[in-house]
Image 1: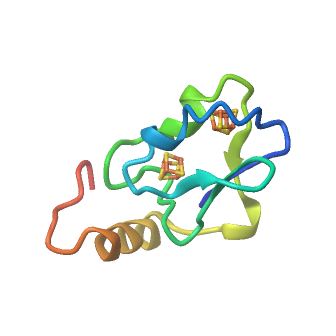
Image 2: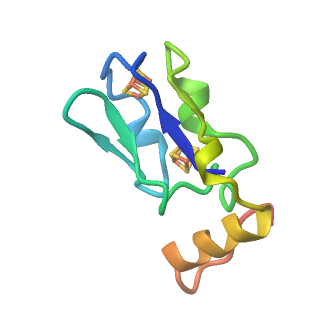
Amino acid sequence: MAYKITDECISCGACESECKNEAISEGEEVYIIDPDKCTECIGWVESSKCAEICPVDACIPDPGHEETREQLLEKWRKLHPGETPIAA
Ligand code: SF4
Ligand code: SF4
């Protein structure tokens, strides 16, 4: 399930550099997550780094993007061709 950023975001920017998939960018009002790049951090680590670092808990799972672990790994592989996912 891709994560999303809620209106609680204070645009501190802390999450952007935490995302190794480069899924996070500055939006017009709050930061945004590209669901096509968010793997819940699966492929790198087992917990969502953006959610961990966000000071206002604005990074949350997006129920509109339900995905299995296998689908998330497949997304990761497309983002990082030729690389091997960690903790797969
Ligand atoms: S959950 Fe992980 S992959 Fe998804 S946006 Fe946050 S840091 Fe990036
Ligand atoms: S860490 Fe949280 S408050 Fe800061 S930009 Fe990211 S979502 Fe917004």
